[in-house]
Image 1 (cartoon, rainbow, N blue to C red):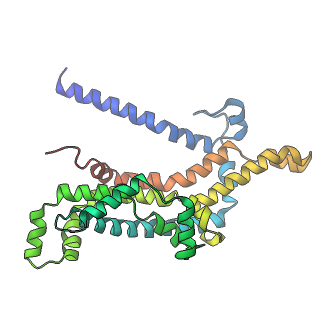
Image 2 (cartoon, rainbow, N blue to C red):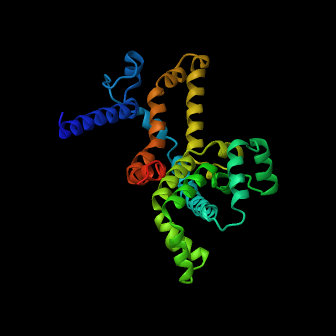
Image 3 (cartoon, helix red, strand yellow):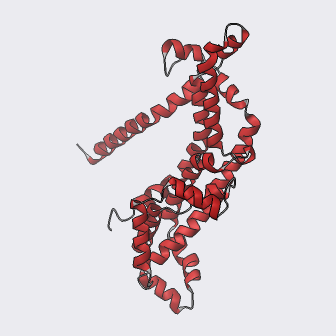
Length: 295
């Protein structure tokens, strides 16, 4: 088999694998646009008997609160990602410097934090009683802005791609540590920054557990927590519809979308992430594979 044929075969295999990976997402989109009666009769199908937007209509009945929650989620995602990237990048740069006297103790603290956790109760008490972060958006940003795994990824990339000679040359030219970091190290580290930034942004975007603990105001409720509550409301209505008696109330409950509404909620969450991922894919792969191939 010639080299060209092998490449074509490899491309075909990769295309098939990509299609297989996309099938679940395509099915979610189709279910969200399917009629609930069709889903009840035939189950989940790529070719439903009838199409409907009832799932999205039900979700949009919470339209104003969804808009507010979208704004909150975008704010904590953007602000949290910026704070996390700046903080962890500077920390990773310090750990990559062999002349840093506290390099080993701080590296030990980073590694030990991957093995042991302070626990949710102690974190809640400290964040609310000591730092006063109860019902504050900072409670959704600060506890998540530093992660040991991301620091290690950033440090490894800096050690592998920023030669010590380059840093020493900057010092000879009169640059201090901050100027060296911002003008030399940070631009070189863009692939790892983009990869870590995407992972951090997705974590902030999916945040709802901390919001459940700390947030009380509806004006500060992030999107994920709101959608969890919408899902619980829907489940409650569907589970109690039989106990409400006959008549128009039961009929109204029976007309509520079930599976299509669940998938519509999922699409509201996944949409922005799906749109953003292609722009970060190149840096995401390059940043995660740093150090795996020498050359």
